[in-house]
Length: 110
Image (tube, rainbow, N blue to C red; front, side, top):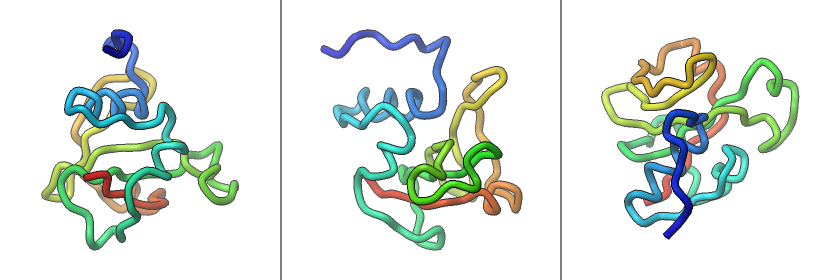
């Protein structure tokens, strides 16, 4: 059994890791490592359960997976489930133009 997670301190990648672990799927710890799991799909092909990877202000000028600074879970109807600072609260967010402009890639794990 893996060690317990501090669910009060999730960051985006530990939250995604936890969701998959509960369902018996082991993912790497950070978003850059997670971006190498599964197979790549286009934004137009995403479906529920796919991982969405985004860049951040601090990483937008980097290359390759170093550009990735955020991960979310696609839940359908143009929405994603994720957590992010400063509150680290889990939230559902519309994938709007702002998020699309930060989109790097999507991966299908299942």
